[in-house]
Image (tube, rainbow, N blue to C red; front, side, top):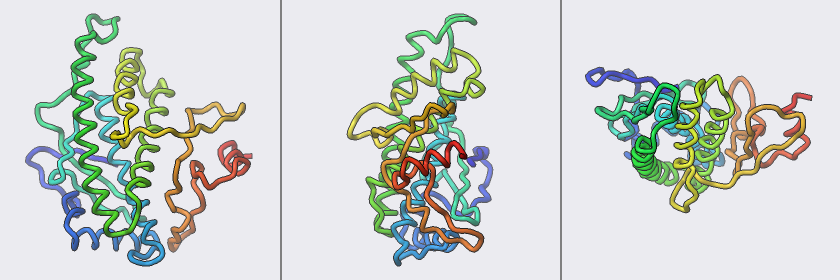
Length: 260
């Protein structure tokens, strides 16, 4: 969950993203997160703390993308503005402000016409800038998390990329989300930019798609790497493999997704 606070409103959340770049604060946050997940920071579960952090942090990334493509709104991604708190089970809730003076142009040439070419060109520039800023943001955070946990930055980026691609696939598939053809045009336009094929784009990676004649839902993508959630052993239950985990054999995945 991501909430918006006013420009002059104080945050009630415990931590700022900048805290993740300060060793003492970072280790305090990761230690508490590990405890909530039944893992051990610095022990055998340390890498899982890092990979699961990336998976949880992708929720914030998805909020940024959803705000821009669905509502033409730019969320502030500065490290001293974005704040978060742990939710008691190892997940995180986020809070930020709107980027002042920034809103994506979605004007049409007429009520029944698609966005103009001028609008799409300007929008491409703005989305590209946001994507590149978010990439730098993630690089700094994940380098710090990798230093503390031993998790691979490549794996952390791939976990975020999977959730971003799954989000976009779900949005495009579900007409109840985009509602109008004009909005779908903007979403598909933005998706090309977010997922541009480039070695420097952390949101791009080739993912296998679950295929089955009985599967009628949105495209379902398989992660390239396991997030290690199966190592979690909270007081209430243990966590098995996720339905998108590459460790699952095809029969088990099919059974889980089709609930046979």
